[in-house]
Image (cartoon, rainbow, N blue to C red; front, side, top):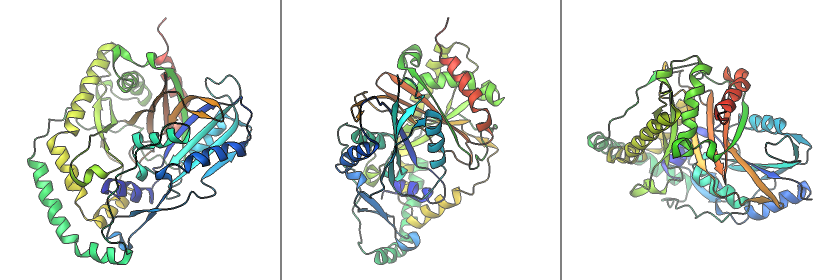
Length: 426
């Protein structure tokens, strides 16, 4: 594994960080739940990334490696139903609290009532997948292939230097010192490289920046893309502009301090880092909630995001990613495990996390049923008990909310405020 992917794998062993890609399909077409499972299994057989498992090295003295594996018998699970939409969200919420399980699994809920935008019964398919297998863009491509889209390009994973796990551990132990020296040298180069000045400073923690506990509540709101594109900007900008109107009052916090941590993709770096399946990082983005005009606020947020992207792709940040990738495996494993016990911070770089991915054209199908919308639920952390997913397919954009304690008790109030903010004026 690339270091970034290994970090995701190690983190999954101590806290739940699986990705949940939900797709709702019309369900009038006659097909048994067993037939749905067979159809998805047939498609999974052609996807290289779904024929992998993880082999670790003793003592984490070398990075875990990908090894071939067949699709297991229980990799695609069918639930015949009947279900309600609320029951599906409740079941997915329960799944999201479990850590360290299989690399992936598909859950198919048949005969679901109450699904937004469905005329009658619907079907809901959920790809639960380890973050080690890829970031939001890559796993979205895998999900599209499962439901009729084209196959994703095979990942360019690094070759294993030593095949035997015990010998790899011995070799890794011997190289700890040299790797530390190289990482330190690259770290100094990163410090010396130019980086655009950051525009966002830490802000005081809110009630959304507490440990979420074991409870999870999921909600979704699907709107037309034209309702989101404020002033012709991107969907991501449009959603952030609306969150700026809702979050301060909901969290009883200062509008001037409103910030979100936004996942930002970066381009291919040179060297081994380019092999990583996960090529993103989070960055603090001011929401300019004190600007009352939404279009002007959207323009300000768009400028902030553009500055963040320049910063993420700057020589200094590229060098810092190379330095992190050069650290010994055992150091990365230890850091991932210690992060699970980090104390609650007094300041944060954002009140919430927002992850946004466009999942392409609305041409996916399941047993002849057309895709209605897609959703996703970013994992909670010790510092964030409220996260947002923004996922588009065709002309439908879904804002997904994942909430833990204490936000979970008020999540329906929050969704009502979001819905009102997205409603057309007049």
